[in-house]
Length: 390
Image (cartoon, rainbow, N blue to C red; front, side):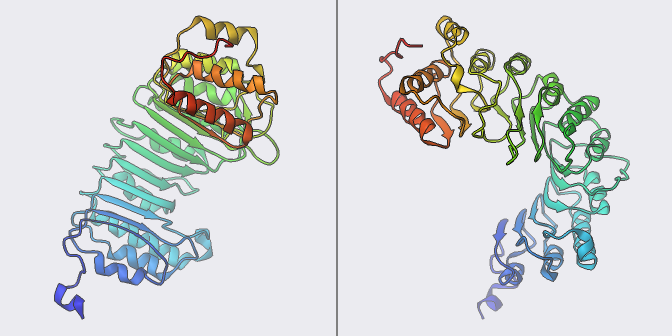
């Protein structure tokens, strides 16, 4: 009865809405979709396709729409499982993009989209951010492709689909690129790096994320990214599997990276460090990163902590005053020396290399002791010097 006095919308002055709920309450969403909405964020339940999915998309107002986020545009099932609902959903999405083509600035669409929807997205003249799942087939491109794009987030099965789009972006303004690879090829990271070099965005790109599963992180795969000297963020997230550690880098390539990418503030290599003690990266790499990447704030790296008392590391630590801004170090469940004195040596060596370190993201009792010691030391008066053992 109240809705009759308020008009067709419960909140007629609402400008932004974020809706996340079950299918049971989704029909009531229409009571909040007033024509003045600027920002719409809808998270569909990630279940089988339902008629409410495309019906809801059809009700989204487009007059002032600038920010659009639809999570799970399509459910877990592939499009060919329920072709009719998929086509209805894509048709509703296409019509929405058509009507909002002049106002839309950001489109975050989570799920595999049809070719017609992708083509429409690529034509939006004012789009700054695009997140989309590329279809598995070749994409015929429109005449103008994303002339204002600054951030691109895509999932893809073949690198050629992504490369095909990047090559056709006019007057590239791309600053941030996040890709989710479904390509199982061991060389997919190297292929991606070489492809990005071909489209000449190394002088504009400042942030690069690449996620993949079951793919080893090798020197050959990392090497193409060393040409992107303007990067402030590089995150290559390739988790380890039950079959073993996927991290196959060494001190040599880490040293090259530190010299080539001095502007880094965020560096993530590999997944969260696992229990395997096979890494050829030693704490010497932390020294090189600290010296060359002084603005580094976040670091995720597989390294072997057992080399902390080597002569080279001891010498470098003693002869250089470190100023790196690193505050967060992700070590996962990397194994530690069992000796108590060695753990203390590791703790104060890391603190000397990264004097601003505040957080050690870890698993396991050994690294927890390191984290507690670092946090206690950071809270102590700064007149207390580090122990002379390093």
